[in-house]
Length: 82
Image (cartoon, rainbow, N blue to C red; front, side, top):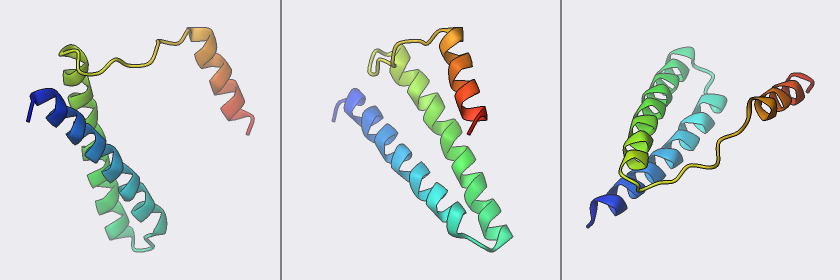
């Protein structure tokens, strides 16, 4: 299997795992178990970001177009007004 395919497969799997951790966190009453899921999610998010940066550097992934500061401010305002 070629490296690009492996990297993209791991990225996809990691994204799916993050969704699963989020679901488990939301449904877990036990605080110790909830914290464990949160720690696993945080570690997975860090791993996903590092792998994303590697994929981007190698040209395996092209991120969405960068947004302007004005667009960021607009989204912040919209979210804070919810």
